[in-house]
Length: 115
Image (cartoon, rainbow, N blue to C red):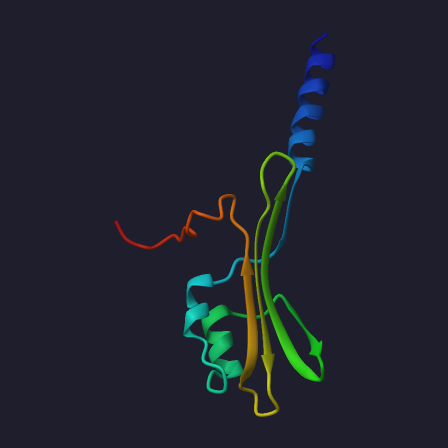
């Protein structure tokens, strides 16, 4: 009987974790406003956000993607992504920043260091 209870408990725990998934990596979303098209360089972006999660090409322009995607079977998805396109000089040509929140009326929460 104890074996059956332990097995059922283990299956419940596995089922709870199977309903959640995280893809990508967190990045400093609060620094997106500091990007200046035509001025901010690749080195600046790397200093602000770290290494990109993905890299690629879009219409011949090098792209860096920062993304953090959290999905759960028990709550709304929490996602954010920043796609940066560079010109030939290595400066930001354009960027796209998108995020979801559980409540669109509620501003994004950020964690800050301090007391």
